[in-house]
Length: 433
Ligand SMILES: *Cc1c(COP(=O)(O)O)cnc(C)c1O
Image 1 (tube, protein in one colour):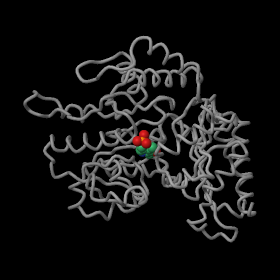
Image 2 (image 1 turned 180 degrees about the vertical axis):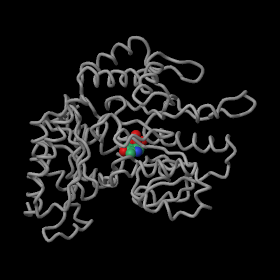
Image 3 (image 1 turned 45 degrees about the horizontal axis):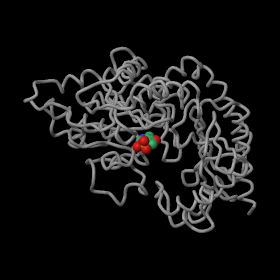
Image 4 (image 1 turned 90 degrees about the vertical axis):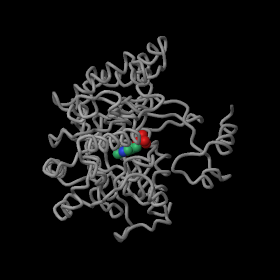
């Protein structure tokens, strides 16, 4: 098919996520259609090459078209792509479960439940938490605590924990019963009568992604964890975005030495190749679900593709690359380099209100030259990212926060090209270009 035919068919039939389709389908809009990828770059059907500045919406880790993940997928494909995890098992899923457990301190998160994406990993953690409380004599613990600006996915339960109005306001009243706070400073003022009804608290450790790469104060997680332990409230960590090296360590929670009752992993789990998620939990939680069939303690939850062999093979290859390529060891210098580049380009710029960095993640807040916030109608963040495309960078903003979240394999020259592209785009947009 020609690029023109592809664009026409896309506009006719493909309803895109989080997208106003009227604008997308407008006659003067040429949808970007990606044809291939290699390392940290993507190439479109017209042959234009870009740096994948947001890791294909926060998923890619070691680059596109990685020979080791490709080979692992081919090998697995010769055997079987998928068989059900209901009533049978498969080697890639078994090995992956064991390897994931080994990434955490011994005897902590020892049980692995597979699902399909970040939303279902969270959904699963919430339902496990609710059922655990019921099974251990606390049916009154039926509410969740979550944070303002949080994002935990789009299925009804996961979305109900979310605190970004755009995603949730139309669906209020569906999902779990949720109490929301802004920060851990408010924990102390929660009435005891409420705390006693809490099942679990859910949080994105170190940094809230969809909030605009909003970083938490130091020790936030430690404080929250201690409060949870004191109050008998379970802790669910959403590492869907932060997992697999993004923040500089394999998992964000390592940086505060916190191990939760549940951790949700997805996006980077397969290196950004295939949808797969895992909810890890402790033996304490797991044991509560054991019993004879008629006791009805079974966790009645799952999906058709749970433990998909192909996706698990990709995830095993992803983890092997971390070891073989010493990905985490190489991250330190890149994180420092990014820091220097951000400082140089945006440290003292009239249109930059703040720059936040957490590992290889950056959020850059843009404002008008007089320091006032940009009007939502101006779509400034979006226009800057569109402009950055002409300088060879693809990324998406969160409102007026520019996001740079590249694959961990990005090299220093590409990092520099990415920050330069954003700097040029900011200058062009604010000079009225
Ligand atoms: C993306 C994301 C999710 C949802 O994951 P999906 O795979 O899109 O369902 C949940 N939590 C966080 C922190 C995320 O970034």
